Amino acid sequence: MIQYPQIDPVAIQLGPVAIHWYGLMYLAAFLLCGIIISKRAARSDLPLKPTLIGDLINAGALGVILGGRLGYMLFYDLSGWIASPLKVVQIWDGGMSFHGGLLGVILALVWFARKHDESLIRLGDLVAPAIPLGLMLGRLGNFIGGELWGRPTDLPWGMVFPQVDELARHPSQLYQAAGEGLLLFVLCMAFARATRAPGQVAGVFLIGYGVLRFIAEFAREPDAHLGSVALDWVTMGQLLSVPMVIAGAVLYTQGARWAKGLAAR
Image 1 (cartoon, rainbow, N blue to C red):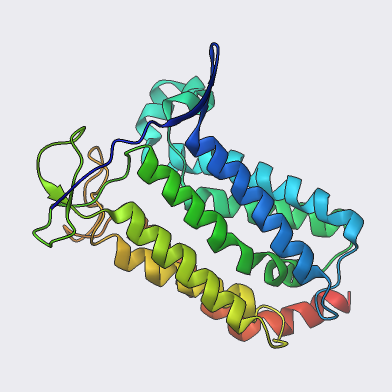
Image 2 (cartoon, rainbow, N blue to C red):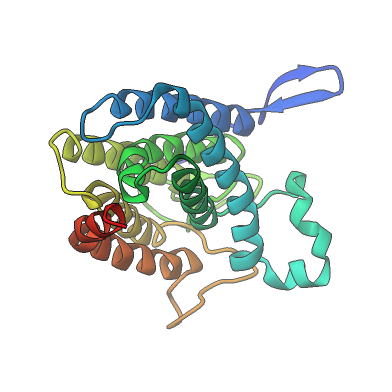
């Protein structure tokens, strides 16, 4: 059994201004994703003008933040949102959803593709391998903040989160950082090294994340106000991951045809 290290969530205190580790993780994620996307954009099969990289990262970051917050309110706290509509802007009260953030990024890519006359499917292939690295940093931010802890366990690496109770629990934030983050990043980057048909890289990311998140949810404590949402064991995270796997499989098999059709318009 391991004791949670009780890391101070505030990284830097400048008078009344507190800079949290979670915010720094987001910043680092956007910077690293930008670097990876820039390097991948230099490939002949994923061309993107260097002057557009900054616009793409800014659009994606906005999609992550707005989509993540709106997704959380819609998927995890709809009743609270209905009771207090302004709660959606109370970001200091916490609550971000990856699935909502992903939808936000997709909408940002749709906007970017139309504005700059780029292939939406190729943009997805360009961006997808960078996303897991951002996820890894986000989950590390969750761990530092002492949130999204796991279910009770008797495994030797079980961790006691004293802000919760005295039970040893799965450090599920670290599981997700390693699985949906580092492992998926390595898999996506390795798969993307070869030239792939349009949609396949993004499809692999969607399938990989959906499967790994579904598995990780068995170790993660469900949201107290939701519990299981289906069959007495399916969590909201698992429910939202199923459409991702299906969408990824469809994109993997049909993306090239769609890209060809869009190019012919």
